[in-house]
Image (cartoon, one colour):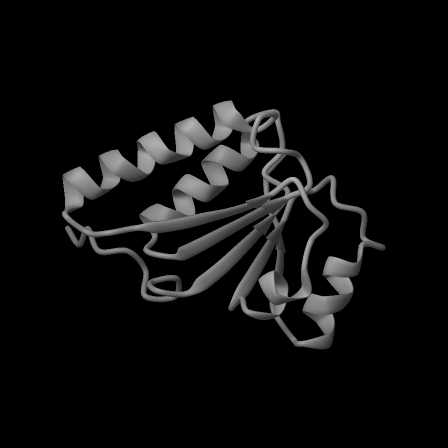
Amino acid sequence: MNNHPPLALVKKHVTVVGLGTQGGGIGTVCWLLEQGAIVLVTDQATQEVLADAITKIEAFKNQLQQSTGKRTRVVFHLGQEHVKEDIVGADVVVMNPDVPRTSVVFTWAREHRIPIRIGDTT
């Protein structure tokens, strides 16, 4: 059996917009890391509000690195308005279902032809 991640996400820059406080975003970020993606998480909530989710993601990342020997990368941009560079610098953007379709992040992604996926990141 082949245990290698799909090449489609290996070393791809994926921005997750809206980590959320209900736990769904944790699974999305962890899955992306497992697939070999370089993940940037942006959320207007503060680090304090998202502390539990961040702790779980960091623990998963460390466990993944220990079990596979591969370095994974996740960066958090929290507690501020979303910035255009986080969106247009991505190969794929995964939006929390709660992000309004009228949000400027959708506009930025569309303008730069960045594929948008609606993820289970509530």
